Image 1 (spheres, rainbow, N blue to C red):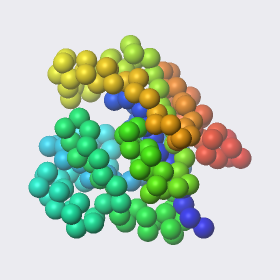
Image 2: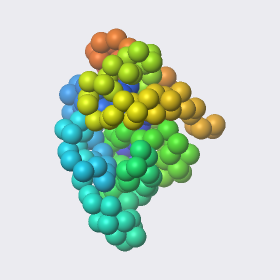
Image 3: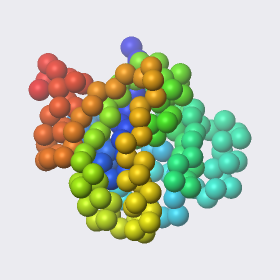
Image 4: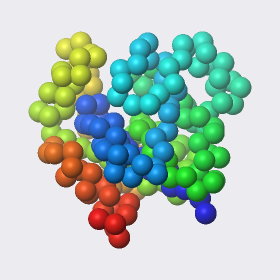
Length: 180
């Protein structure tokens, strides 16, 4: 029996990591993929492997990742070990870029994808509150908020405009309909 790769996508500030954290609390048997990121500091929003750009590129060249991408000036990588965990039946959760969904489909053919959405007002407020970006950076991220899901990738759309518990209930209803 293989595990499911459960992927969350959506614009910056939509609350993907908050939804994933709530899912992990509700279903601790699911593992959160620790992505490698060339972010300069740990913001505490998710389990992550912080790397310098040189270390990341060396790891990528050595085959340490099953998929990599760049977004917002950072490098991201999913460790190859995730494939072994899935093969052993472990359900895994990851936050990925929408643009990477066709590649994710190739790497994880049985993936389940949740496209998390929220209104522009909520996105702006959340981006301002997290304090990572300049006003110009926030404007750029909001400009990409409506990026389309690549064709041929099925997603489950989930609104995260309200309480996280409501969003979680929808996610759980799709993942474990018999347990909700």
